[in-house]
Each structure stands twice: as C-alpha cells, then as structure tokens.
Image (cartoon, rainbow over all chains, first blue to last red; front, side, top):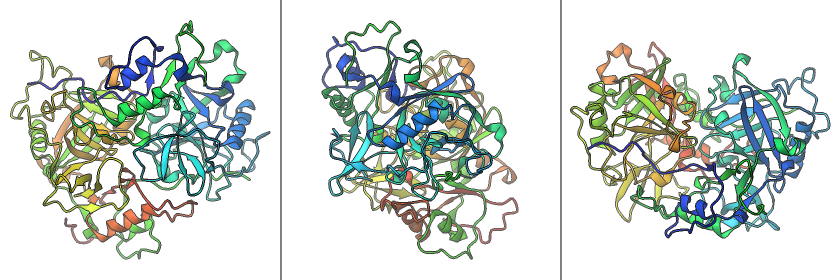
Length: 315
Length: 315
C-alpha cells in the first residue's frame, strides 16, 4: 500500500478567487465551505491610507495593512515615512529563524549618517496597549496561555483583559511591529519587523504592533537567515534592498491591488472559527475541539480584475 | 533620538560553544545565564542510531533526531529506509508557508514507478499516542490550549492526559512527522514533513511525529514556497534534491557531528523554562509570567572539534 501524495489538511490563509455567495454552507462546515459561502458583505476592503506596498528588489511585493485602531501614532509615522520615501533603497537587515524579519536604516544609530526622519515624530510614546472599551471584539472561546481573553478586532488577532480594561494586538505570524531599543519609548516606526515563526506572544505588550502582512509574506519568510547575532546580516552584501514603499492611497486607482480581507465580526467568521475548532475534513482523525488564536487563518482575497463580484463590500 | 539597532530579545535556540560550568547563574536567570552555567551533565549526546543526516544539494545539511520512545515502529522504518539509501536523489516536494516542508518519492502513488520500500514495513499502525506511564515528563506549569498537560520528554515537546493515560509529541516548529493519506494507517515514514511555522498543534494525535530537527532547519524553512495546492511544487524544476541521507551510526566516528541537546529533565532546564516564563533581559517591559510550550527553546550545541569540555555528558 502506497502513501497518498497529498498529505496534511489545507492551511492556506490566502485564496485567489472571488466569493460565490450562492454556494450553501454544508454541515459541518470546513474552511473551504465557509469561504465558498461567504457573501460580498463578509469581506472588507482596507482603507488605502492603511496599506503600504513594500517592493523589494526582484519584483517581490509585501503589502502591510496598518492598524490605527491600536497604534494611531505609529501608523501615522509609518505613513509619513512612506510619503517622504524614507524606505526607498533601505535594506532588510535581519532574518532570524523562527522569529522575525526586520528592515530599516542600518545607520539609524549614527547621527552623522542616519537617514533623516523628516516629518515623522521621534520618539513616540509606546502604543503597547489601548483601552478595550469601544472595540468590537470577536472572542475565541478556547482560552490562551498569554492573555485572559483573545480574539479579533477589525481583522487583527488581539487580546484583552477585563481586569485592566486594556486591549492589545497579538504576535501571530505576519504581524508587523515597531523595533525599539531597551527604552520602551525608543521606537518610532522607522524599523519594522514581521513575525515569521511560532507566534512570540511574550512580545505582546512589550512592543508596539502596527499592522499585519496581507500579501507577500513568503518573500520575507523564505529569505536566507542572517548569520550574526539575532539574525542580523553581518555582510551588507546579503541585504535585500527595498526598491520602494508607497501608500496605496497615493497611487492611482488602477495601480492599487484589489485585496479584501475577511471580516472578523460576522457570522461567517464565526463559522470559520468553528470549522477550525472542530475539523471535519476527511483527513482528520481527532477533530481537536479547540483552536489557538494564531492557528485561525485570516483570509485575504484578490478580486478579479474586472471586479464583478457583486455589491461592493462594506466593513 | 535614534532607535537602537539591536532590537528584540534573544531567541536563538542553538548555541555554538561549549559550556563553562564555572560561570555562576545570576539571579534572576536569563537564557544566556542558564546556558552559561550548564555543566556537562546537563547535556545529552543523542544515540547515533537516532540521527539522520539529510544532505541537500548545495551543501545544506539537516540533522533529524528520531524519537523511538514515541514512535518506535516509524523510527525503525526511517532507519531502514535510510540504510537502503531510499532518500538518495529524492526531492523536497512541498514548501507551504507557515506550515510544513515535506519530502519523499513523487511517484509514491504509482505502483509502476514508485521507489521500492525494501525492508521497510508498509503500512504501519499509527503511533499517534502512547501510554504516558513510564515516561519522565517535565511539566510546564502554564497550561495549554490543546492538551491537559504539556511539557517535555527526552528533549521533545510533548503532551499528556491523565484522563486517558496517553502521551504524545507536540507539533512545535522543527518537529518531524510522517505524511499520510486520509487513512490514519497509511503512513510509513517514506514521506516526512517538518513544521516551519506556527505550531499546528491541531495535528497532534492526528499524525505520527517521529522526531525533530536538531540542526539545519533554516535550509528547509527558507526554501521558496511551492505554488501548487498545499505548497506542493507544480514544476519539478523547483524541487530541491536530497543528495544523500545517512544514519550517524553508519558513519565513521570522525564523520559524525558532535551535537548535544540540552536535557529537559534537569534543574538547569527548569531554570531555562523559568527564564522564559519571566523575562529579565533589560529589553523587557512586561515579563509575561508564562510561556507557551512551543516558545521554550530546546538548545542544541556543537562541541568544539577537540572535545575538551570535561566529562562526557550522560543522559
């Protein structure tokens, strides 16, 4: 008897096609059936002012969605840096196995050589947490090692505490944070990192998360690892250059990518979470019955070029 | 004020130098201080019969330690396959973002073209769980979303249930499993996968884990992602070839790599876990107070070539 060549169940967080809202959700739901049944209103088009396109050399694009609901000052700084072309020709400095990829100005610590921050504010007060009040929070019922409650806010993995009344973003793969030194207030958004390994949730509330990668994370996670301490490249010859970074809002409409993210405050998303708590794909022997925050996919789709997917999605 | 260029705390699970047992552990412990204070008896030399060296084209070596305590039948099959040179010239078939890298025979499903399994048994009864009795289990006190108890057994992340009396290995990054089809008994060890993203713990008890990568995981995790479903490469031109796989026990002594793993049943390891539960490096603002199973590093060291690190380590 031969082993089947298709092994392990689907775990693809990005789908490429539009929704077909006339496909009924079968019971029990699977990720595939939930997404097939999602309607236009289940999808959200991010604000172009919150989308940064980082174009790496070699035609590799990484799209980051900022999270101003959690880090308004840092999101605004990233917008300002982007608009003054701060990132253009800066390198990816660090690729640490099972941890983070980081980019920024290699001379940031040298006042004589550092690239000017221009209109960007520096330093910025940290945005490690914010008040939980006022945030629509979709709660995951399965608990968490690191936080009293976890779930999602506006498409981002998040946590909160009723004891402190605080909410914060969670370090799941693909989350984008603001590098800082030992001083909690030393970050400003000019050094950014992306989580590429097991979610380092111990960084939660220790550093400002400012967004997440919607597209192209494979261009970062598959980079050769840096050989120096913390995965920094010792040889600048190993840097990968950022050719340009642009805010989608500053591009003509036709140059913007038609990305949508699945809303996390809908019945459809509730079904998606359920489909991951109890796996009903035929491959599964033990359906588990629970799921961890960072193992719930947050689907992103690319609309067809002609855009004929029905009514425009709303938040 | 400029941001410091060294950002985020140390999370390197592999260290390169020998132990210096005369360095006292300072209070409170950090990962660095715990490792500096570890003595020779804190380290374990894996059995060469449990080590497989996968040499990929381009002089990239991946070393896997088998876990016969949990999967004796599958470990033995992997040894047999290795000894009959089953892997030589087979490719890496699949690289799925934030999930797994998998290798094996691309023709495994075609009886006319499949590489013979020879002395290896197929199919094998699954080894998803085993009795917890008889295993020295170092328990993590911080709970877990997926299992009643988690911790470590003989250097591997594991879980157990007092209700069922079962124990099993846990899908943390670097863990190596045995691909299978929908039939739980359809795996045999001829298709192997390695976790490269956030620990897909929902696979626990659904598939046989047979070991973990001790060295060289970056050669797998940094591979370009496959463009087909589940990350399989659609174009065989994108396959990476395994030049050879050899059991360390079958190599002359001088060709074996002097790797040691930190024991997980010692007071030193208890301090290491504590150093990760409460982070005392100056960078940390909020020490967290807990840690998740897959975020505890399992250090591996390479002894100096002259081997002069004192007494030989014991289990």
